[in-house]
Amino acid sequence: MVRLVADAMTRQVVYLPEDTPLDEAAQAMRDQRIGDVVVTRGATLAGIVTDRDIVIRAVAEHQAPATTTLGSIASRELLMVEQSATVEEAVHAMRDRGVRRLLVCDADRNLVGILSLSDIALLPFSSAAA
Image 1 (tube, rainbow, N blue to C red):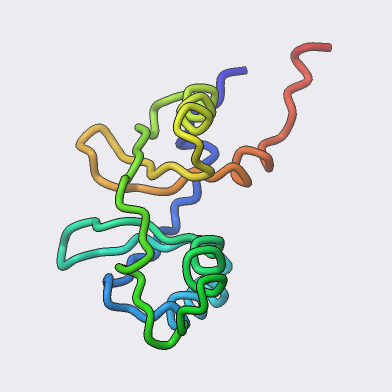
Image 2 (tube, rainbow, N blue to C red; image 1 turned 90 degrees about the vertical axis):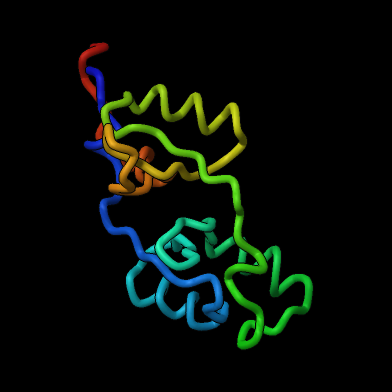
């Protein structure tokens, strides 16, 4: 059974400006029950920050969460996959790039979701091999 990224992705995308303090971003992640936010500079996508990034790039480096901004720790390389791609193609892209999340776009390159390893892990198993 071929599964498409569109069937597995999380459609809820939270955008926060790059000058947002990390503590506010962490609260937004907690409140929305998500593990990442897309960082913006005006109307432009500027990066992505995960809950793990906050811990590894800020807290572990003794940076104050109230004064350190998303822009200072964001991953700037935004990797995208089209929603019409297969989950298998997305997994290969994740492996090749060593990432746990991909931004998902439509055919016009508009952001429509995020695909994470946990989204993939939650997919039901197929019984077609039986």
